[in-house]
Length: 621
Image 1 (spheres, rainbow, N blue to C red):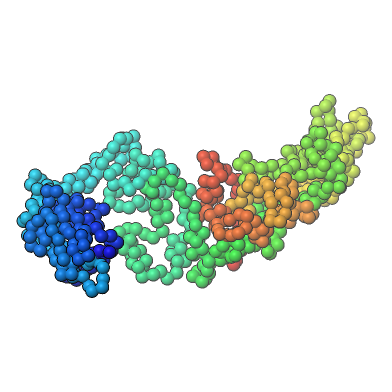
Image 2 (image 1 turned 30 degrees about the vertical axis):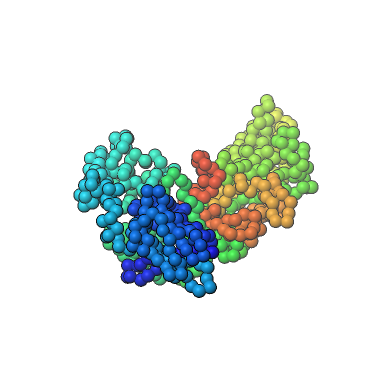
């Protein structure tokens, strides 16, 4: 035995909609309660209004709850029955339950449920007593009142508040101002200090934030590239994008504004890292849209990235060093004017290593020289300070030539004319022995030549000019103290002693438009290799142990970096997006992504020598 219920409704077009359900029971509850088998959602119907139950094989009993009635075949009653073989109707409020004649051989009872006679039902059952219309104003007065309240509270009041506050005095803006009702969210962490100074960015009412408001504080920020070239680099834009740009330009919103990327009022959060695709959209095939570009195509560090092009010191204009961008695959050479064989100083078994062991108690050396013995990190740990004669080379290579009552006299490093004067003064005092440390017979670095005879004689005084000139020439000649490490310029004539030393430059930054943090690479573990640290970590990228010429540019290439660094979704140990090494605005500071991850609340400093960098023809900028 089962009841088949067919709920009938009508669409706005008059189309009949039938929803069928089945109740596997011989009893059906009717009412407004959601648990009813036949739910009639109308106030005129009680929660539990009536019950339908098969009292025999062909008779359906209908009983209303106490105090309630139903209409059975037009008769208003509390109890009744319907012959299911013939069918009948049951009226409950505005609903009609039509019991269909039972089909031959079927035990199911089909009942159609339909709402009819709405107006008649409202007359019979006064539902207005449940409405608020009797005690409330009409809908139209309420609507107009609310419109006026909204316009006054959220338009007129904020406008008045905006124009009434004094500009340029954020302390006056303390407390609540009605224009804050227009805020779409809190400011980001970087702009939290401007929470009470809206006019710092929103200079003119009903005008979007202009770039001039941003550059008033961010004075060091500059464009990524020329605005016209950036527009060309986007290629052919879709129709709706061009339409959007044209509409924005009509209202003074030029494309490429700061707020196009740096959106505000998104809550107290940091700016999210720039996704790799943001860069790849332009740089993947940039040469196709900008044929005159000097930039190489780049989309993913692991798959498509040009070779590194460091700024290399290639020549000198007098005393001024000049740098040029040269790709590492072209084997650039550096003209630093310094002679320094790295391989000799890093040899683990040579004389330098033996000297390091002898000097270890005084200078803290190990079994041999290490990279860290000469290359000292800058205070921020990002790069290394230029080596100095006094702090680094002087530990082993002494320029001392005399000791007077325990006070050591040394030649002036970096002052060739003062060196000439000191040597001439040494001989003029009548000392017969020339300084052994400074010529071809130099002793072990660190030793101080002691004058063995301080007496003077007429012969010595007569010979001192020639002997002094000879000693000066030996200092500036091959195997001399200056010649061994520096490029010496000869005097203008054979009789002159005006020797000169070519200036030495130590670039502290080669990748002028990229960022590299040495501190993060103090410990290196390449795939399939053991962990390396100290000099091992340095030599895994900079092969100084195989270089005998200071002109060798000991920089790792792209292939070396790809051992560990891949793209944004790479399987390599370090997922590296464009923003990890490059800053969009091409400044000299650390990229924003690393700044957030590594140095929260700490200022980074960089050291860059003032050298003019020149980009080669056809090379990336």
